[in-house]
Image (tube, rainbow over all chains, first blue to last red; front, side, top):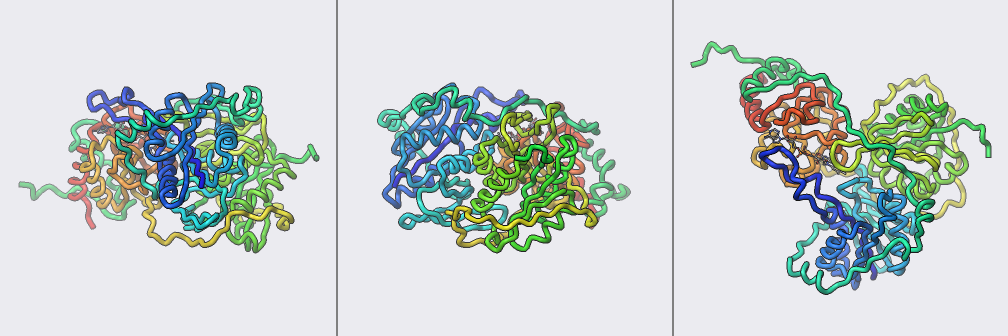
Length: 277
Length: 334
Ligand SMILES: Cc1cc2nc3c(=O)[nH]c(=O)nc-3n(C[C@H](O)[C@H](O)[C@H](O)COP(=O)(O)OP(=O)(O)OC[C@H]3O[C@@H](n4cnc5c(N)ncnc54)[C@H](O)[C@@H]3O)c2cc1C
């Protein structure tokens, strides 16, 4: 069986440790990581590989630095890695990305049985690439998959969507996007990682080798355009309290305990202080 | 092709959790406002079996037209069947805009529909408007930080967006309202779905839902550590509420994923929200659309979260938590 796992490198920036002293984010620690849901998808593929005779190709579109993440995937147990890397493709929206992934898959592993993607990415969270890739390749597909079972050419998946538990079946070739419910990614040892750096090759493809010229990318490419990015303004003219915590809390409750009491259905009031000491 | 037909804004009728999730009604309401600007009609799509209730509801909540297909074959939700149906309808009728709620279903369905119609889609919008040149302005959270992006689909139609539940307010129902209801037969010759639904049931696992709590005590990275974070539980208990968390906190294992508040998590609408040690990143505040009264505690007076609050307390989150617990224990009468 042939499995393809589409993975993405995402910045760790938004979850950067925060500097106790200065109160700012430690951007110096920013680096890329394999998107968590993609890692779960890879783990799912690895478990299939263990139980069925399968090989795994991991594929990513990204900057040269994404090679490191591919090495990690190889160390985890993937057999082959492909990096699609071209400045022409920078800024692609999901419409364009899924098109590029399709071209790469058609070229490098046309005989796949199952494509696995992460259900969403930590940096943009659109959850669109997987479903759009299914359309590109005209495949039966299911998103947010938590469990898979394979019998012969049939894939059975379990998932939770909008509070409904569903069991679905489809025939290979198919596509799933994997949620983070199950399939906790395995640990990769440093030795394994070093090996992956030494031994296995990462193939690099550019737009041209996929038959995508700049004009074809232009007309087939992104549909959406970001007009501007702006800072959301804060809305409220608010009450600001500051000072020692105990004073602030007193002041706060004195002013708002009625309001809070009404909401929680209990009476909140300061006890008469005559029995103190 | 008729070119003089009135423009249409379509809203996909996602009725499956009607009573818990009002996103379709919220989209109809927003579509009504947008439609005025571009002189369009608002058309709700309903595919299913025995759907009269939804036809009535969507009419009462503001749709001008309903496209309904009532057929036993549509008894359960099916991405593939719906895709095939809407693809045909859209090719026949050229809607200007298609809006879909960002439910799990919507977020799987919309990207595929956009791909089939070869058009753009923006995900999880937190605002919609019309630009001066009549385009749909799609406002969506942008990568990291506090930024919002304005996105347009210039050259392709329909313009499509999925929209975060809770972003807009529904129009109160009015059962006197009328709409043009087109009941269409299920088209012939639709491709046979390749995904078979073997089993489905409403999840019975008691889902921990903070969506309906009237008081939420939300904690962020500024709580400092797991022990201090756990104190929020005590405060929440005193207030009869629930604890919510930001993503770094969930990633650090201080709280479970099911209490994550924001774009990637729950959308909450408490009457009172306490926000402790939270910066107020857009991905988090996207989940606070409907909080009535916000009390935020942050040691940084410039924090966005403080600016969004009704009461902004500048100070150490954990100190304030401890003092609140102590003081509430004294003051609350059962
Ligand atoms: C695609 C995407 C989706 C995301 N989805 C979500 C989501 O659904 N929900 C979510 O929450 N995040 C989400 N995020 C992450 C989000 O961008 C922020 O990183 C996150 O909300 C920040 O959490 P925080 O406020 O707890 O931490 P920080 O931003 O680190 O803020 C900590 C705050 O605590 C204050 N502080 C520090 N010490 C103290 C103290 N002792 N007392 C008082 N205050 C103190 C600091 O001044 C600071 O304001 C998402 C990010 C992306 C890219």
